[in-house]
Every structure is written in C-alpha cells, then in structure tokens.
View (cartoon, rainbow, N blue to C red):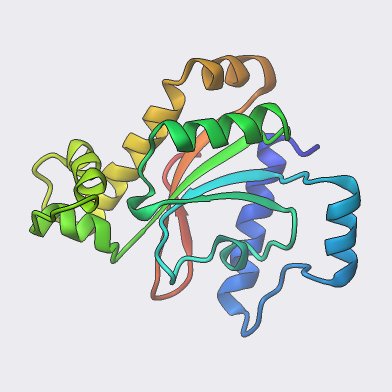
Length: 187
C-alpha cells in the first residue's frame, strides 16, 4: 500500500508523462485485467472529478486498470453518494489520497455563474453557487468549487477519523484542458 506522499508523487509523475504522450500510457493489458480480477482492486488514489468528456483521470495520470478509484459527477460536487463512495475506497480499499479534480472551462461552473438552469441540473448549479458566491471569473470559481468539495469531504466524521488514524489526505487540483497539466491547489 502506498503512502499519501507516494500516491501524490505517482499522480504528478503520471501527469508529466501524459502531457507529452500521444497515446494512453496506463496498463490496460489482458494481464492487468486478469490480475485485477483475481487480486481485487488496490487503487492508490481516489479521484473525484467532473463528468466532462474531456477530463479522463486515468489518461491524465497515466494510470491503468485498478490504479485509481474514480468518482465522476458534473461539477465535481459532493453529496452523500460521493461521500459513501469515498468512504468505501478509503476504508475498504485502503486509499490514502483523495483528490478533488476540477477543470478549467467547466460547463457546470459556467452555468452556475451565467445561467439559471431548470430541472435536475439546478441541484448541481445550486451546489456550485454555494461554493463560489458572487465570483464571476470562471477559473477562480472553479478553484472555489474544488475547495468547497474538499471541505465537505474533510468535514465527514469517518473521513476525519481516517485522516487522523491512517494519514488519509484530501487535496484539490485543477486540470487545464489546453496543455493537460494538473495544478495541485494544496501540497
């Protein structure tokens, strides 16, 4: 099992490889599939990210089968479902690093700033509005939204216990669509 620092180093190194890659770099071989099936999953990090089709965590971090426990929801907002998934990955799978990965040019953040959507989309934009307040700059709003999601995870009692007992860590990051880089907001 990797430590929090080792997991973060692996994410950083994977992102550096990705930035110069022309093809996927994670191990998705038949052997990796068989190994993951036989041995179960042992991801080294949880990634909570947006559902945006341009944001592919396994590619961004050059990860393969079984490397990341990925939770995707538009606007990378947090509710009880995401918290339950995070608790499972941390408690039962032993993940020690949780990364909330927002991204620039996020449609959900843009909608929260500039529109008043109807239907179920409103649940997402209302959450984002709680994070961003009156912020009108898309990038700063994205960072505020990531930080709020981190705070919501951190405020969960089981997560707090695991942070104290096991060295679990929650950090925020922003993926930049243009160049593929990941900017970690807290180190």
